Image 1 (cartoon, rainbow, N blue to C red):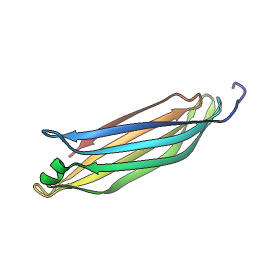
Image 2: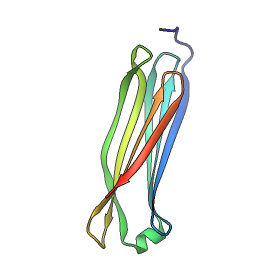
Image 3: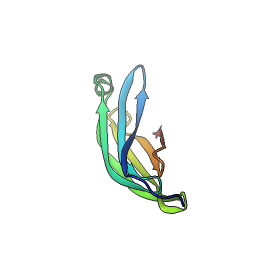
Length: 122
């Protein structure tokens, strides 16, 4: 394993929108992390759910975060070489009485690189 350097701060964010004739609702998640060339540290997560006026007119309302996890994965020969964050949010649909979900997953690596993806399901 390479020698560890100075601890630095970084962040990654992912935004997912549900669109139906315009943005109905969205979820933005930002992960703050530190890294030093050997390992990572999870610092904090900010979650911003949003329901547009169009979404409100369509009967959508934000319900809650239904799943939440922050953890570490093995990378760069280190059990804390990658830190990840996952969030799932639910919106209620008053027209069909179904839940609509957006999920987000993102990761940050020992060298400061990062990535994320998102999706939605009904």
